[in-house]
Picture (cartoon, rainbow, N blue to C red):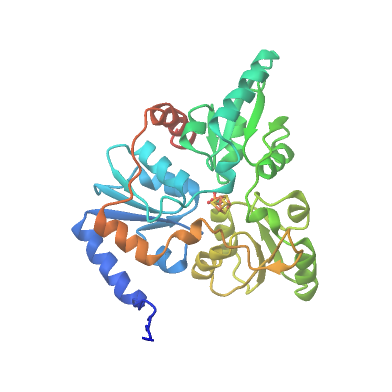
Length: 329
Ligand code: 13P
Ligand code: SF4
C-alpha cells in the first residue's frame, strides 16, 4: 500500500505596511483616489484620501480630480459615487459588500406600495435614506443621510404626506424631532438593531459619568437612554468639542472607534455589545459583515486589476436628479 501525503496550501501573509506602500504606489500609477467610510477597518481609513460619513463621501466623490475612484464601503455608496460623478471609473474592493437596509426595500415592492397609496388617493412624497439601491433612489423624491435628514424633511412641502424608506428606526426618530407624520417602511440595519439594552444599562452603571452616543439607526429603547443621538460625523464633532477626558459608550459599528480615537484621543471609547437573537448571548456583532469585506488586500487587488467596477445603468440618470437636489443644492 502506498501512502499519499497531502499538504495544505501555503497562505503567505502579506505585511500590512508593505500592502500600504504598494497601494500608495498604485494610486499614483493608476491615477486613483481612495474614499473610505468610517465603518471600514482603520488601516483602510488611514490610507484613504477621504474618510468620512455617507454625506461627506457622496460630496467628496463629486470633487475627485483623478480618473478613478476606489470606494471602500458598501455597494450603495459606490453606486452613489458613480451616479454623482459619471465620468469617473468607480471601483470597489468587493462588489458583494451589500447592506441589510438596502436589501429590505426591493424596487418592485416599493413601486407596488407607492401605486397602492396613489390608488387610495394619498398625496405623498417618498423620502429615501441613502442606504438604498440606485433603482430605489430613482423611484423617490428626496434622499437623506443621517447627517442632513432633518434639513431635507423640512424641504418636503407641508401639505404632502411622507413615505420614508427603508429604516423604520431612523424614520421614527425623524418623526419625533420634526413632528412630521410618516408612513414607515419596516426595514432595519442588522448591526444597529441588535445592541443589547441590558449590557448598555450595565455599562452605564459601571461607568457612572459616561456619555452614551448612539446612531439614529438604533431602535427607540437604545435612543431613549442615550445622551447624544447622531450620525457618525456628528459623533466625531461631539467628542472633539469635549476637552475633558470622558468615557463614551458607543452604540454604532465598532470600526467607528478608530476615527473617534484619532479625532479625540483624550477620551475612552467602549463599544456597546450586540445580542444574538438565536441564543440571547452577547456577541461582538457590532461589526458590519458587509463593511468588513473591505480589506487592504482587496483594495490593492482592485487598484491593480481595475475591477470590480460599478457599471452605469439607465435608471442612474433619474437617481442622479434626486441625489443632486438632495445632497448638492
Ligand atoms: P452615516 O455615515 O451616515 O453615519 O451612516 C452610517 C451607515 O450605516 C452607513 O452604512
Ligand atoms: Fe448597512 Fe447597517 Fe452595514 Fe451600514 S452598518 S452598511 S446600514 S448593514
